[in-house]
Image (cartoon, rainbow, N blue to C red; front, side, top):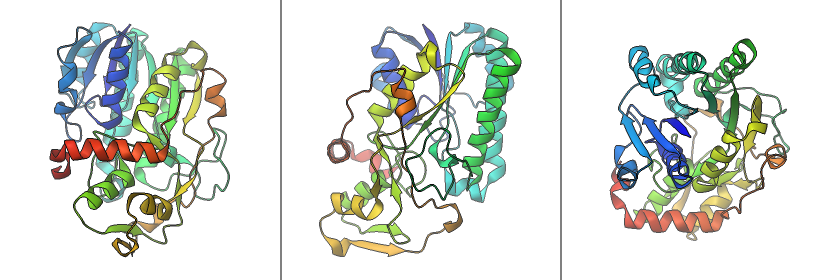
Length: 319
């Protein structure tokens, strides 16, 4: 198939591109490179099924119109602001990219009847959720980033109902691994990548708040595999799916897995405490009804893989 990936030079997007190429799809990529890194795609550019890379902002209507002349079969839409903290500081830019940009892509998809796979976030769920989260769990975004994602989900579903556009919505939980960002625990790669950077550089691991908050940590290759398999499934159309492991891990436990020296684990006040979610782990039963589950990389093995990659690619410590 002929497939367009937005945000394809970003963290998860890069792995989605890799997965699609391995499945011999023709892949085209849009990325503004504001947060993405074209070097993330270097190993793919000589592959026969790597067709083109467009350095384009998804809010550029004219550029999108020209790109969509390629008549894609599917679009995987991952381009977004990807930063909870910055979205609180600058909601205007977040909404422009995440909502208006999604709208423009939907319009082009409608004109060409291109299947639309939207990668949302688990951050839309209610802060008070205290059991494994299903797709039916209450939503309550705590940041402009999460609100933008939820609003975009509404846009995507409206195009299915109003125009019969085939759509799929995916909500990945906390994804980590190689090629993520390794700074400020913001956005792609999150707290695991930040902790690993601090550990390698012999700095303390700073925990916001009590460290009792929990997350469902998903290795990026597993995340990308599920995005592609569910996204391409005919049975998934018109539906929303969690992508998770179902394992709940506290930030305190995570820090101890990475660093055995307790004196290097310190606690600091949260900069944006109002956006914090105390428990967040997902139920993926719905997705498992339409695809066979992949063999998941355990948290411990995923951390080792990411650590070894980072030691071989220390330039990412400087980003």
